[in-house]
Image 1 (cartoon, helix red, strand yellow):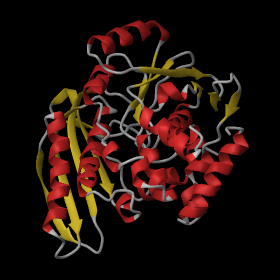
Image 2 (cartoon, rainbow, N blue to C red; image 1 turned 45 degrees about the horizontal axis):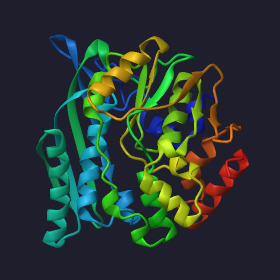
Image 3 (cartoon, helix red, strand yellow; image 1 turned 180 degrees about the vertical axis):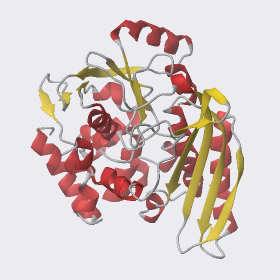
Image 4 (cartoon, rainbow, N blue to C red; image 1 turned 30 degrees about the horizontal axis):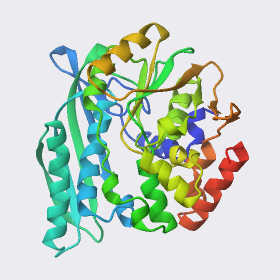
Length: 352
């Protein structure tokens, strides 16, 4: 079986895509980039980068309670996809569906979150659509431009390449744990979850990186998808004090939660994971240092197609992410069972 087909999300995408004709001006293949890359007529140097994301499930499940968070994440999720292909943003279109007669303060909160996220990166909402619906659903379509020959892709890493991340992770899964497990909100407040897209870093990386993907679905899921696309493996140094934010580490102590769960869960943030050839490592370090950007080296690309985690003890374990990535569908949305089985899967790796 194609390794991509072991993941239910990938097969769902494929089941839809098989009904549609492929555009002759689309440059990327399915699953191989965070945004769609389109060749423009009369411009052989640049291509259009387009992506669309909806925030709905997180609202329905109660993951996001603050309307500001809902708006912020809607914009940042799409901008992060542009970052992962190295695109310069042009702007966004939004579609908003909400209950009839929803309180105006709720609407204003969502709008403020969207606008502040745009201001963070100097981009604009160009237009959109409003609808009535039983539950809130927020969609953003981001548009950007990227030099055709330098667009970043999820495919292209080689054995020996170094693996980097643009910043610390875990805040998405920390919020998810508090919400789904019912821990007190003060253990990890929603205001701590304000992930930002790494747009400037993405543009800089198109000169050097051999592959790139954002961490919107969590660190280990991102690595697992890159592994499946490239048919290569990763050896990851699991120094959780380096990879996870201090607030996430504190939450793990308060709740007795293993740190690996904050990297393995499906609710991520918007850092970039990317690979660099050994000959360009110094160049990427100098570039990030000169811009005062965080840079975390987390491992190397390996020949064998597996995700190996090197724990602080020096012990190596192989993380089979397929059961975790398919778990929500396996338990048919039962969140209590999801949390129980999530930890059991980690124990089967020897992660506890």
